[in-house]
Amino acid sequence: EIVLTQSPGTLSLSPGERATLSCRASQSVSSSFLAWYQQKPGQAPRLLIYGASNRATGIPDRFSGSGSGTDFTLTISRLEPEDFAVYYCQQYGGSRTFGQGTKVEIK
Amino acid sequence: QVQLVESGGGVVQPGRSLRLSCTSSGFTFSSFGFHWVRQAPGKGLEWVAVIWYDGSNKNYADSVKGRFTVSRDTSKNTLYLQMNSLSAEDTAVYYCARDFKGYGPPSDFFDYWGQGTLVTVSS
Image 1: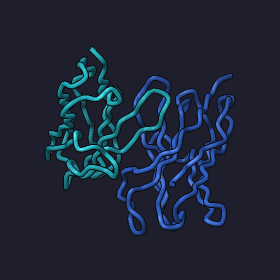
Image 2: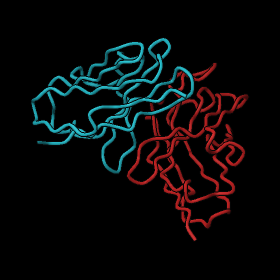
Image 3: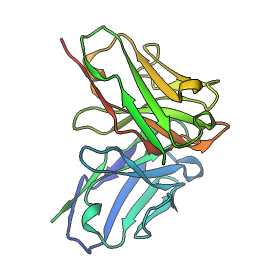
């Protein structure tokens, strides 16, 4: 099973700042089968990125994904108030596993 | 618009059973595979099960294999999760989620999610 490790655990930033979230896999994720989700308190997760770098329908272009192999990154270019949430990466190249999440909080 | 609505959660004693339902609307149910994903209180996400668009294949996480069964009823646009031999470790919000890709093998990531239903296993 591929284990995903997200860092940092918590990211404290101000609106307008850039957020960089990391997701590292214990072994290579085939064909960049990696997705990112956003989850706000009391809500279901929302798909942001799939295939490591493809934005899902309706996702603003301030969200971008990159990476391959074992190292992946979600970047939020300028944080909006509604972006403060928990973010999860998920690999779907073999079994389906999630990272433990990164919380982006207001500084 | 696409909607997924789970129901059937509640408090259940250890060892007992529960069946969750997920009713869908706004798209062609028979064209998509579906997953169940759970989230223990204050914890991260855990994939539980998948069923193909035509019900021909099902797959389960090791943690639930042999105890949980996923099924679907196209006539009712409804997905089910039958959970047997429940334990405290199964306490979680259970989400149904639509697979991104219609037809064929699932893509195994999720574009629409329900709001979740809470299952609490406690004596």
